[in-house]
Figure 1: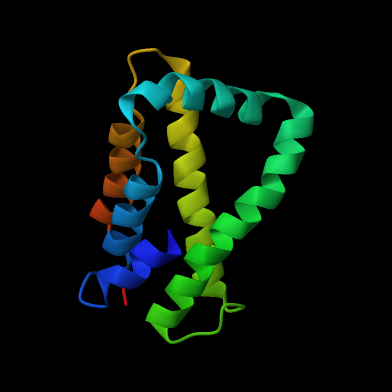
Figure 2: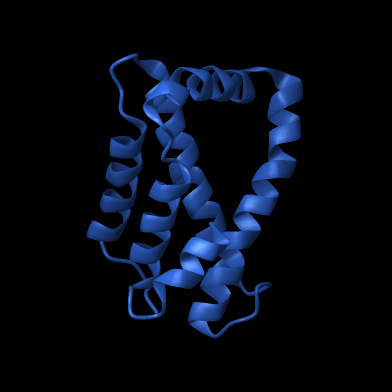
Length: 127
């Protein structure tokens, strides 16, 4: 995901770049989707896997934080980059929950909806 973000350059708005990178990060070949769905169902419902996934999500979040910090000209320890990291993770997890709730759900459409809802309302997170 970091490589994809870096390749986008700075001409793409910060949240638009994150939206695009998250979509690409979650794009899987059609034949892999049933396996990915079961994997995510386990990760989001089995207590020991929930605990372990928080460590993996920290790495994912750090990619977002580092990118946002660079784009905003702030330290990765600053509030805004960290808030953006948590916000993106929250939107993704909510999208995954909805995707898993119904067999006819489309994960990428849910992620689009989450980012669209967030950016449509305007934020102080633009760069």
